[in-house]
Image (cartoon, rainbow over all chains, first blue to last red; front, side, top):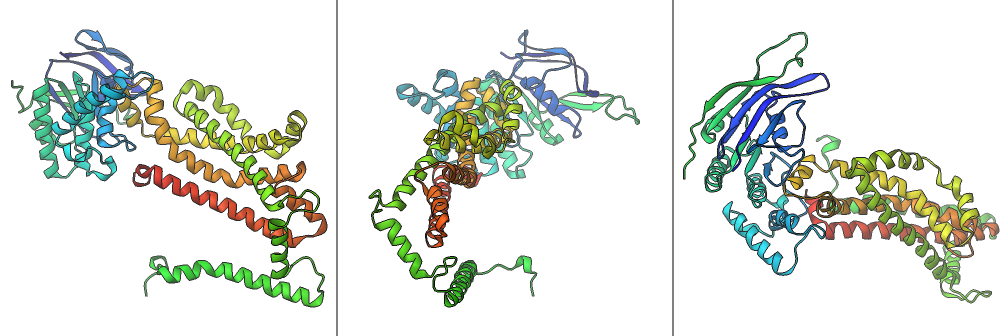
Length: 243
Length: 270
């Protein structure tokens, strides 16, 4: 269960305003897509949800509890680039989260526990269609496969919220379609709440149950950074939350 | 005719071009040596090849009259032991301090400025202090190497930590990593190839400090020998020693480069 509530959120950096007075209620299992021009604050909004930054004013709650002040295993993330660890094989990349959960001092599981974790990681790799390349290094994979790996890695701890920061922005159109199908399937199977930033409006409507557009309502031509962006449209997407 | 910047030599020509400066150097030396020896057969500045062979034979394969040692090997062992101890201590310090300074803001704020200042102290200027406080033995020489190369390595590695994409640090936190786990499984492994590179770059300064320390207070070592025989203008010993030191340094650099490619294939491709 991961319902997200955002109340009167303001964000900016020394003098410039990025987001102003954002309020939003998102029900569990929604697929929220965020669109808007470059620099409109949608990525900042995602970083606030991640806990990588603190809002100036306002608060974010998840199921009524205030959002922790730093990233944690309840919120998975996939970035456009640099999402997987280059020094670990695919399988090690996925098993890493399980290592962190159960091995506080060695950072790595051993023996029977490691075998169980590896089995779970292998199942996760299979779920994203990467079962054949478990022992390959990420640098030997294509861009699409690297993003599949990043998704598998983010989902192995079964987070309630999945954050996607333009995850398919660098991929070919054909590969994108495959990734849309993959993400939709995983989202439905797992009942996660998904927030996805994208530049592609058709992608936003296709994947989202809810599409939010970010834009500046007030503009001061003398001081372009004086006012931040708000949510200008809150539209239903074409995707449906099914069984 | 293609532009010069777009033309590359082939394999064979490349080899010939690379060998050319070496051959040229040898030819120039031999000609100059012959000319000087022709005027004065006792000239010591540019010895003949035969004199070099004789000196090498004497230093490497004939026991010294006084001590009964094979001097070249004894000097090499003494110098390498100092150099490698110094580099090992410096690498360990640089890896631990560099990681902490690069990854933990509190440590960076506390230690960053002092390391930056220490890095600016000319190490040879504090050599007298080392000799006074640590004595004239091995410790002072190793300490000079450590003090000379560590600050630069620490700063280099701290910068390399900062170069790790922030996405990866955030990602590790979403996988539940504690600070310790993050350092252990993400930062340290990603830093190891950079450490080897830092050691390679430190080889030059390390040899410099080693030879400086040996020249001033020592009873054995490559640097000691070179400065000792300088009193007799023994170029026939000095030049082979310099060539030997160069070969040792070059070999270490080459081995570290191979080690990096062997152990950290991911780093070469990324």
